[in-house]
Length: 111
Length: 153
Image (cartoon, rainbow over all chains, first blue to last red; front, top):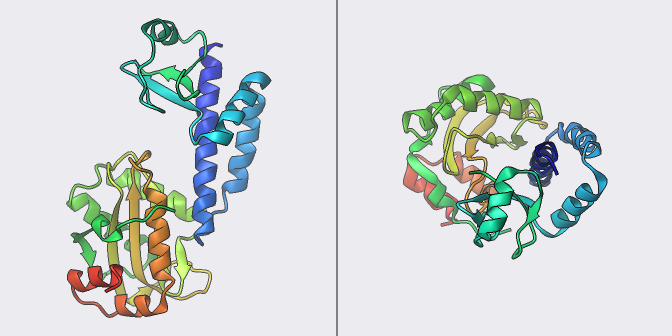
């Protein structure tokens, strides 16, 4: 897992959240024409992510609003559980992908 | 959708009973200026650009004389709403062609705590679907009268 994959996953989640919100806003009666373009951009981005990682992300997204969340001051900002020091030390290097032992979300480090 | 106390998102300083705007562009700017004057928004041009981009995706006019320009921006920290009424009406590109007299501008941060942005929009739309409430909103004079309509009194 390199930083590139991490960046792609975070971008993918941003687009997914945008699509989700646009669809909710549309349901309220507002017109939004750009949704299909967002979905195309989403698919193009998803193709660049390795399949097992993408599958893992999509499975998590099926259960949770955010599948990948930041860790700040050693705290997972998805469930607010403190992460083990050893995990944080490796996580900050950004070479491997870690998941929160409590909520299962994928993690990235802000500090 | 979670229950929202909509009235807490309105401020008297963000209330214009008689708007001066005669065009869509002027209406967006007149409402946004309230946020800027009251320091709810840090960067006017950033927000104006966001609102224009949102309008390009589809008019935020809902028909029946109502428009709810809305969007998320890093230039604010709270979900906040400005209300403006135009007695003459403004062409806002509504599907039904009706000029807009009731404006609700909703500005939210990129990640609002408690995810209230969509419930706020939803609550507003529910109120504005009610013809009696729209009629009342078109005749109110003061902020207190306005809040009373929002609260369903």
